Length: 166
Image (cartoon, rainbow, N blue to C red; front, side, top):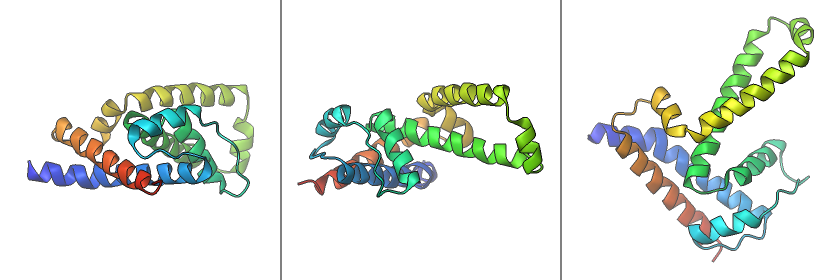
């Protein structure tokens, strides 16, 4: 049981806390969010519209846009992390599968665009079913221990990030 708690903290708790904190702080800085607790944050995020910020790095802009789309709560953060994980590995596999640049150019066509669209939808569905996705890839012993650690990590990171708004 103790080993499972340690694994849950290392594999789930720390990454969730860091990502949650970063996304909430970044959003607070780029928008007029004044929330001081998770309930207020959820309400305010519903009314925030994504605006492209030329001062931000393109990766930050993409993360911010997706974060707002997923809603910002615990379930939204986990869905966002899962979606990002899936997409990153698919991009790596996509690049790895091409022998050279000419092979890439030759494969561009309608079927490639259609496949990207279909995969994006399937990835979104997988992201929303994150408990099943992570159970498949992580050394999860007790699902409940991992879930509690993830919720506590997200809650603590949210509280810490929002304490800066006071």
